[in-house]
Image (tube, rainbow, N blue to C red; front, side):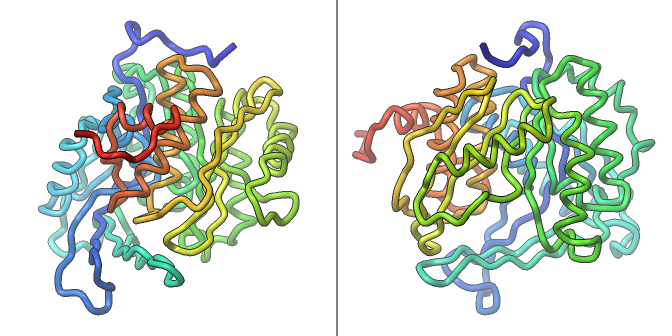
Length: 353
């Protein structure tokens, strides 16, 4: 038995997400403090999921967000459209000329290598999406028009501003009315919660919102320290979350041990209807750029569910897609559907000629 969701023929969108889309400035092989050239990408915790679903798996997707109507906002919109993600649900905010009232988020991100970890510098204060309030959008009208099979949101969006938890809750309730499966990612960003009560405040916020979810990505903590990818420990953590939130139909998490910035042990596990499904792990997985790996994992799993692949195949696709996305630069998925399915089936990295 899998999740019950709308047939594709009765929906207008396969997956809709709510979250911030920022402009990532990437110094590529240089460091932020020493570069004179940045490559730009669009990125955001919730957005990366629909980007992967659209770009890699050719699902019909859209993003609900807010941007300031200036040249940077237009650049971000163009990048969203290039990925095949619908931009029709962007709420545009007038530019005041200096960004004092609202601005578009930026972040500078350098990938790590070996013993040097990745480093991010966030510049996302007072962004348009962080100031969004429930009354700014007619949520029932939006979800009636979008009619998504799946709605995805998470802890990054919920942490952006004073009104963000209420906005997330309103969107979840409207999505539920339209019959969408709702997933919530526990994504925790210390930089967003440092002035709002830290980890404990984030947990309290998540508890309020998880009550409206069907699928949960992530765990709060492991019951004990691990040195290897012991699936039983991760399953125990998922079972604890399931006991606390009996409304959840499925709980999914990555399994990761960071050896260094260039090598991780990588895997994933799903708990559904009391049964655990574990994907074959990838020990010593080479990492080129780990940013977006967890979001790609979620995209792979959601695709599996939308495609009615079943629990086991879906967790295998999640692990494969996450691994492949971490082999290329940027937050975005550059993988193809065929590559993900082949890697999930155990094929190696031989050249395809």
